[in-house]
Length: 288
Image (tube, rainbow, N blue to C red; front, side, top):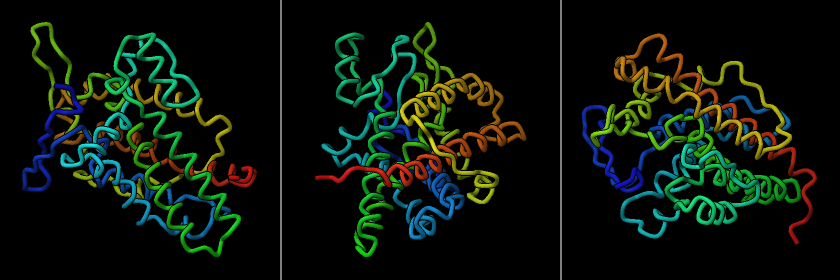
């Protein structure tokens, strides 16, 4: 079985909860922290409803994991590949800067692999970024329409989930939950849940994450997201090193600084994409 169908067991406080489905990007608290931290640093040029919407954005940032509920057979299968991209399985090829269907065709045809097992995370980011651009455009045209802020917050929160996933290094590798050994055993199995739960369990809060972040306009969003994923992937060895030392279960100064930096990276990417979506919406052509 792959990570997408394996049952994940982890502990929240004193209760052991069995979750059917897939590896999470961060526990809910981590995704909420990314979204709230980003919202706190939005510049005044972004609409007030969005800058003040941190709690709403935080709630919506957890929806993509809710969509993986084991009873949601259609939705779960459509959603599962949106949360990761296994960089090694691309065999050095670059994903196309067009859309997920071109990517799926390339993976099937050129790599002879299943794109849903490699993952489609960068496309989930791009699609939800563009949904937010469209929502912000509508707000510029009809700011009195009460429905529009609601959909902007939904799109912005959904986007924050995937940017948070991108910052979690284990969502960029096939070694997402241990490394397969020559004898078929898995070394360091369970690493994913330890890193997932770290922000929530060890007190990484939005106020700390947001400190010093500043919104920046992104000129080429696809290139920026691709570079971000490559950078996130470069931290895989450090994840395994810290786990081997037991530093995710019993935090050290180094492990806490490492996880905080990854959460801050996710918040920065979220902040920059939200801000860029607002700026881009100003010159978006009419829908029809």
